[in-house]
Image 1 (tube, rainbow, N blue to C red):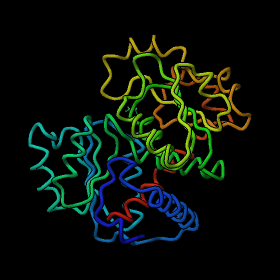
Image 2 (tube, protein in one colour):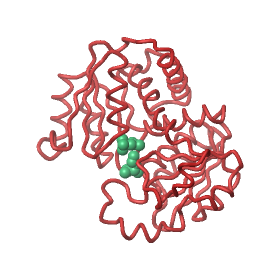
Image 3 (tube, rainbow, N blue to C red):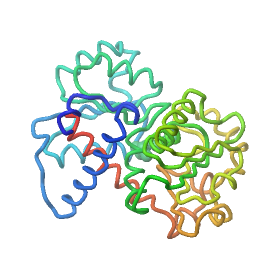
Image 4 (cartoon, helix red, strand yellow):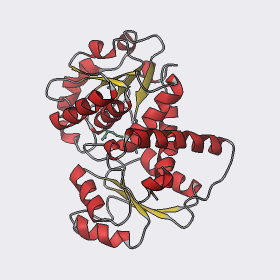
Length: 310
Ligand code: CP
Ligand code: NVA
């Protein structure tokens, strides 16, 4: 299995089969245990990962930098001012040139097409660190957390409250592929796009997962083992912020909503959170919340991906 990952891209969760995704999650768990035991590894000695950021970041940047360094490799950080993907230089030229210098590329950008184009023209693996459509590394860290907290993934009921965005798209597809049930409550006009839903239903048919799409948060969280939310306006949607604040108000994850789920529900959020908007302080600071463990697990999930594809 190990060898079959080498050289591959990870631009969306569906790039890996169900067995491969499980392999990554198990490997991430191993790496987490090794780190806790203070074991040092040099699997990626001599490898350099370029980190291309066209949007800000805390977790993604720090976890990729730390992850590479803990595996014996190194990173080069390229800020939104540096490359100008597709503006200062074509994505194709950038991909071909950078492939001659580094062993892998992590990219955070706007259009998912840019990630795909970069992957097409790079000779080295491209890992998606968030695009407007997908956030696959987030979904892997999230699923590792769900596995740790619930002891299983198949049959777990995950409820996402918010729009059909990069985070919910990736989590929906990963749930559908791995057999977790996924419900999403979004306001009218902010639902998951049809292309993503079609993919999710196709996956769910194979895995037996149930997918529920609703506009009612109460319906989505009924029987939920996990309630997940994200900011109302994602990076790049700054002008829509005021309008979204009005529309999404009834979609706040507060204690009243949490009480409608199972009594041992866990609360998840990819962070950064806008406290008082999509989630209340009371909920995110409650014993139900696993957001810090979830943020930590980005590191372990990504180390597994890096070690396998590089
Ligand atoms: N969750 C996440 O991707 O966080 P950053 O935007 O801080 O990287
Ligand atoms: N949906 C959010 C996720 C941030 C990690 C955004 O794209 O801004």
